Length: 199
Image (cartoon, rainbow, N blue to C red):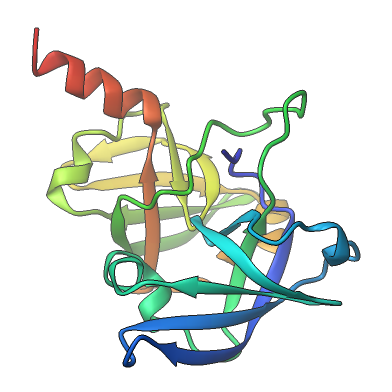
C-alpha cells in the first residue's frame, strides 16, 4: 500500500523487450541513496503503478511490466528519459499523509486544461466513463501516483489545484495539455459502489 506522497523523481534508463516483445523490463534511475536497503521483490509505485523490483543497482532498480500492465497504464508509452514519480510502500506506523493508494491503476486519463490560478495551477482531466462515477467533489484520487483532492466534477472530467511544491517534486512540473496520466480511484469509493449494487 502507498499514500500518494511522492518521495523521489526517477528516470527511465533503459527498456528491454521480454516475452517475444509483449512484456518489457525497465531500468529506472533513482535519487534515493539507500537502494541497497530495498529488498529484491519489493513493491515500488512508479507513477502510480505498483511494480516489483527484480534487480537492484547502486542508483537504480529494474522492474518487469506485463502486456496487461502496458495496455492499461501509461507505461506502454514510456521511453528512455521519461521522468517517473516514485514512492516506496507504506510501513506500519508511517504517517498517512495522502490517502490509501493500492498502486493498481484503474485506467488512463488525459489532461484537458491547465491554467495558473492565484498561487497554484488548476488542472482538469478527462477519464473513461466507467471511472467517472467513482470520482466525487472533495474526494481523493491518485493521478500518476500523486494523492490529490478533487475540486469539482463535470461529467467525465474533474479538476484539481496543484501548488508549486507539488509541481516541483512530481512530474506535474513537466506534465502538459493532452498528456496521458495513470488514474487510481479511491478504494473507499470502489467498495461503496460495489455494496450499492447489492442494496
